Image (cartoon, rainbow over all chains, first blue to last red; front, side):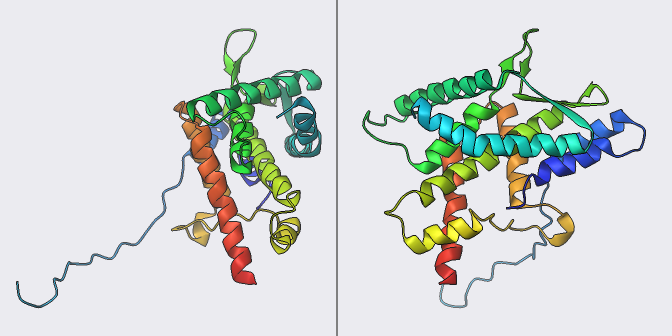
Length: 53
Length: 206
């Protein structure tokens, strides 16, 4: 498993030199939000098999 | 777990993981403080919480007195004991590690580094149990010795998401703790699944 990957990412966000500690904290909060996977969902209509009903 | 065993676990696994993250913080200009500055007291702190969680888990799960806990439950107990927050001198609950950047507190980083250390130690505990159990298939032990416990694939995410299984799991565990729902039972299911993924990979590579 990659070692300390989340900590590394978080530290990079905090120490990014853009002059605003507030922004860094906001970016960190954003990082902590679990990601949602972007699934492409194919719409499949239920197709009842042909037969006697 | 008796004190000696816990001391071994602490010295051989936990301290390495703690040092590795503190070094990472330091190399990026961040200052890290341990809640309990005395390292020996800090270890005692975690041991005492481990024993407390263990007694409570055994009692709630009605595990018989002579029943030993398996490696996934031991790893889960350590995780819960390690990330537990305790009140500081002002009565505010704090993680065991406190991070400063330019003398400002970065509270979210406290959570991230504490959970990442706990996860790494939990993985180390599982690996040590496997390596030291002669009843386990020697091929599997060799595989663990070489590769360690392997991270499962993060299902439904792509390269562009730039994340990993461990990263997403850690975020959810931090969230669970905020909700006060971090559970030894559920963590042991998680660790068991992670090891099972490694076992399946090993079996299919034979």
